[in-house]
Length: 426
Image (cartoon, rainbow, N blue to C red):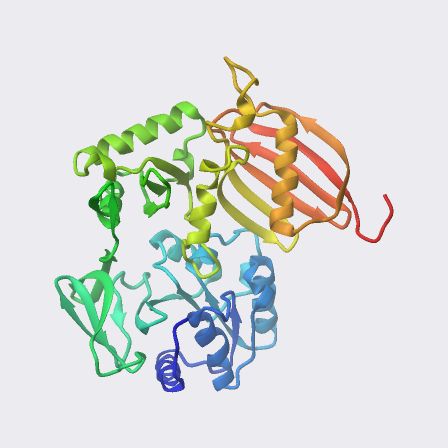
């Protein structure tokens, strides 16, 4: 765990106070205080300026909208502390006109330009991004509606060495020493732009491979919006890739998935050695991240968990619609064990497996609800095929859950599962 002295925190808080005063404010935070950005902006900042604040369940968009509206009604100017993970998934149907914040902060990762634009349009407030790390504290900020370049925060001194960033500031453990930040940048007229990490070199089959170079090669393709190339720690040593494409371009069946994978591999063959070309691919319309906006090792493990467990669906993301409601984006693995015998010339996922997935995944996201009691209103309307991209909608009730499985073809199945509530007889 990175240690922080009070003088480092105080220096950064003073910078925020200089740039973004909290007069008549109220801070609504969607970011955990366990993250340094959430601690600084969501807890310490309002405490130091005698400003009301709240967090906890505000991470849900519906609750966050209610908190913002409450602050507005009391005559306060609410400040929203958020992240790319939350701002990229704002539901348009909520009454945002009644919950307009004065300012929105985002940190943890660069916010995509379209998500910054959409967030400002929906919430009617400027989105200010903060760039930095636990070790460095805040380094720079930007508002993409004005310019895409990052501007250093007051008191942060920057220089370049071979396109890599070095800095000094009072936010560092040793303010007088130059800190080497492992990010590649280029200077611009108004600041600098981030070009990606400089330290992402790995060995694959004894050869040094740059994950950043693979990502840069793939992002040149018009249909690719974002890429993360990752190591998986598998015995074959091969790489994985999480590729963001527009929703309408997502592969929906085995043929379209195979076609897209072949296209990407052929493209990389021009610049990369064969061992550097990812073997395992995951296609999503938004990068899955943790509450701090990071694609961490736990999420990477979940994205590729079906490689080691042939009985589970391929997890591609999760949408929180409320404390008791989830939408999971899933895919049928081509080598799913349950496809054997159903049927040789036309493999499908058995209906009982779809029901099993709904129960198991509900237990994962909500916790165990009790002993199985029965199923009601179970309907199977369409078959589910290999490589099918589908959504599992789960809603928890006091005595069980309702679920449905849908894809671009329509509804595949739905039903209600009942459990014996603890403390009650069957």
